Length: 457
Image 1: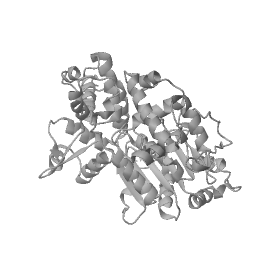
Image 2 (image 1 turned 60 degrees about the horizontal axis):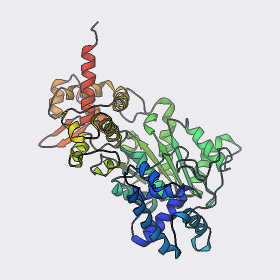
Image 3 (image 1 turned 90 degrees about the vertical axis):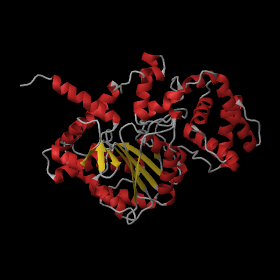
Image 4 (image 1 turned 180 degrees about the vertical axis):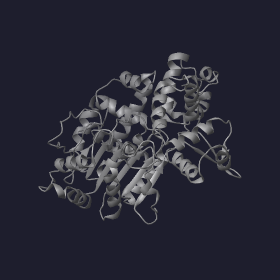
């Protein structure tokens, strides 16, 4: 059994007993118990000072499992009991228990983390999760998770975009969905466009692993679409923004990536039973023109978190100040993790003391990510951004037009493009007003300072 299968069976038994799925701490406890770790070791990994609390959570799970399985489950027999009952007639089909490995991929130990490649011989398919992340915590995205589940399992949406700034939690959300819905799909393929190369490579790799590769190379795409018809597949493409050109408006394909545009269109047009999820920091132009009422497409835009639960395991003090910290960094999990590490190291974990600095600190990691974004936007967008940065108040389109040497068309396209990149906040007032998000604005201030310090030629 893999850890994914362990989580599946425990989650289903807990849901049957309580009506609720495992929470993040319970998942971490199940993983630790399966791996033979002590309560102290699990507590350390989860950021809890007391092993007693982990013991309490574990005993609650033992009780539920004991009642559901009608036998005494405890720490000493936890793993053995789950391994045994999974293969019993009562639980056949509850998890994907028979494991085969893709002949062209390295095999993995059954105790490896869930982001290792798993290929299950269920309905002739496989699960390729080699490039999927390991999820240790999942916070405050239950509504988005339910929406995604509805689109993919009930509505059979063929193309779903999950969009938002870098670090906002797109990949975590989709991986959580995958972990909870493995049995819903015959084939699951997770690829990152930063690492997986061309569309041809992705298709060839998939067909090879499924022994479905055509002897005639020109038929590979047809073979792939036949696969989508014959089996229920879930294809996840991460880092889709890698397809788009730098220095142009958002969503414009690079010349070498235009084949993906045709591929996405075909996914929407043909009849099949599969779904493609695109994870991206910006929307592609082709999908903006399509009506969700007429086409099997959906778009889920992720905003920042507003629940302080994410901060609980990071060793921070002054809980009454956590909401202010969340607001300052716009609820972006990556920003918050970065700044929490800084607060622990420099301020001894005291959030209130950090906030008294009255400065929005941009860490080096944030700066690296934002520099990449700033360098990718068009010159027109840069002009708009730098001008918005000069004011401590939101500006209207008329304000921008009066102060920038841009045509109306360039200004409106620039604003639209920044909005598609999630680098612009819209404020509904008597007039529509625009401003930069807090963290991006602070970064742009630093950019302006650095430019002013550079020697003039």
